[in-house]
Length: 316
Image 1 (cartoon, one colour):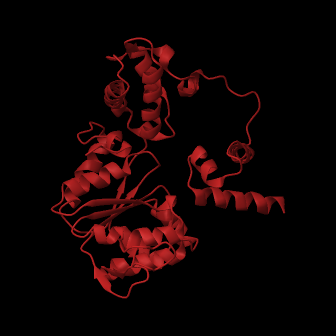
Image 2: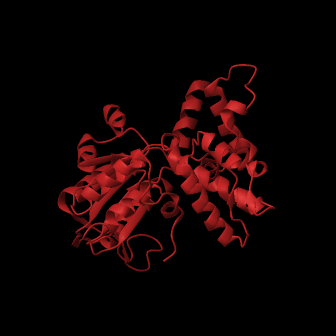
Image 3: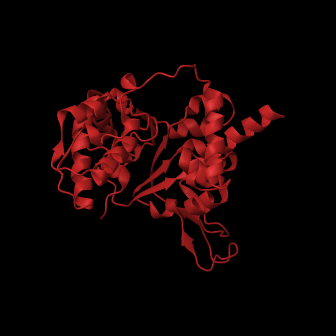
């Protein structure tokens, strides 16, 4: 079975003190059935931890992942619960949903904070009864699944604002696990860098044996706002473009240079204006395709829609 990008992002046995605690807790909760909520910034490896919990559990079924923010509310409902033949146009055959596929296994709902209010209600019912109906069907289906959810949003704050159901929040967060950002676990960077070099050298048939201490120091000094995902992308770029057998400082992309050695802007930046300009630029470059612009900006479509609505409100 091919590993996903997320599976490659971090590895059990990390010597980081913060991650050691995460793995210890994950191992402790793995044999049980309680719901687990994984918290942390994007790119910190939440799906890796979800798979780690599943792999160390006694569950015999599949690990089934659903990325909630990538789907509209209608598509997400179909993805989760499935449909009967004829339930809607083009429903030419019965389709089993992810909850059904996760029977005796684990279902991982990533970016759970992005689901709409109607889906929240349906999800709460499934968690309470372990049963559901396929779209267009009347047969009640039961599933012995274990739920692990993840988000980079503050669900408690969303509950206070009325954006997320309080009863669903408490159902999801029986056990909370917070994954620290890479800037707080920099002792992992050398191990990750060398693993990514090996991976991408093999994929691209490049004879690259390692990285110089100077180049590694530059990478270690970076804040990595995109966390492990950003580091992985950086190493892939370095390997692909490298002309030597060992990665050196000249191979480190300019945008990865530590903030301390960058020239400070002469004028203070207005962060809100900068964000608006980035959004406008991304929309222009993507032909006003909002889904493509969201991917370019590294945010979900719903987040982009909220920011656009805020911008429109400010212009009224």
